[in-house]
Image 1 (cartoon, helix red, strand yellow):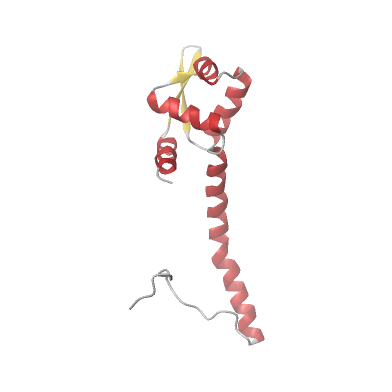
Image 2 (spheres, rainbow, N blue to C red):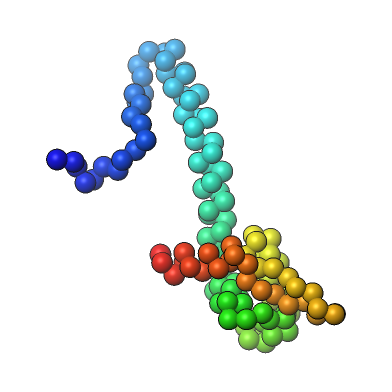
Length: 124
């Protein structure tokens, strides 16, 4: 019978070899193996940081309903335009929103990344 407290890992490797030469190789392998995980964890943590601010989440929820201009977003959030602009800039930088220019106005819309972030956040 399988122990339910253990996950199915991809492979089992000898841990902490006693031989000095094997230990050096093992440590190098660990570093190489972990580099991609570190990059992924930094990316995921960055996205969670973006979603840790209620104003930014509220902006995403507004844009889920329809496109908004900055004036509408600032009014609904009851913040200055500079604060709304700051939040919109961070969301844009992380690919969660996109900008659609019409004449002299910019309208903000939810991107696929933003939709996915909301969907995932609702399921946590």
